Image (cartoon, rainbow, N blue to C red):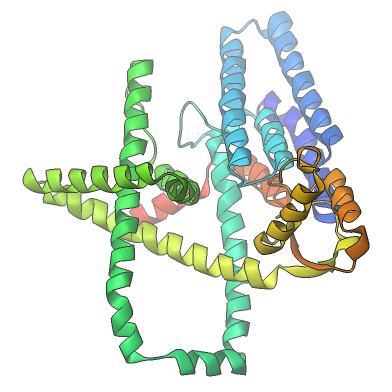
Length: 385
């Protein structure tokens, strides 16, 4: 075990344990913990620099530090992007940067993206996270399916004629999703091509990593299409044109490959969306009174619309600000209570922001201990079959 691995173990375990505790108990990761983690990382780098300057005199160690800073820089951009797109809270984004600084480069011995080895941390975060959510969602769905009222309602709405009538609509929906996937695939390939031109070398990304990124970004891409009709038109025109061009050129194997990958993508995305949506919207939502509203709560969209109307009418929109991925802040809670002081018994549907910290901590430990990611293990399993 290298000296960097040895001196990073204690900070990793300490930051991980404290962040898990605060996130599970209070639904947030305090800034003092972020500052502490980054300070420990800075001390570690200063020690490594001094150790190399006065004892080792090895230029390779300086190169190691530059690669570490590059990894932290790229990871910070990715982390902020995930925060701004609402995939996790600001606290989760900051603690992820702390892990990037504390996990040594040798922990990414089997990586996907050479310029961003910390991508393994994301893979090892979201795989266990999705598995845990899927299991919880399936258990909840099974319980609901065993409900007599649900079974009765299902039988009443079950109709062969209705199923036949819905087939054209279902086929059209599948076709549009296929065009969405094709468009995003082309954009992804274009980005890789541009990066390769900039750096003067062929930039390769693991196909599994590309699939993972597409799954993460598809939701936001769909939202963007709903806001900008021109994007919708461009998506379908470019995707259709690309498929038609491949057909004219007789590249049927390429078309079959895209269709095969798109089908897998649509099945995965469909299952994830339906099951997780059912779980979050039904199992996790809790009704609370305005007077009992808590910091970090996520408010149901319909109820938040009513609250927004009251905020606008009170003229406090500028002071209230906008909701963050981590839920409402303490100041926003107090303002809502003030606005609804005459109706504090009003019921609103809320749910807590998801506690990412335990999964981030698990990801750092798994990456540190194995040097690989779940995608690489999965790829090897498939290749060996």
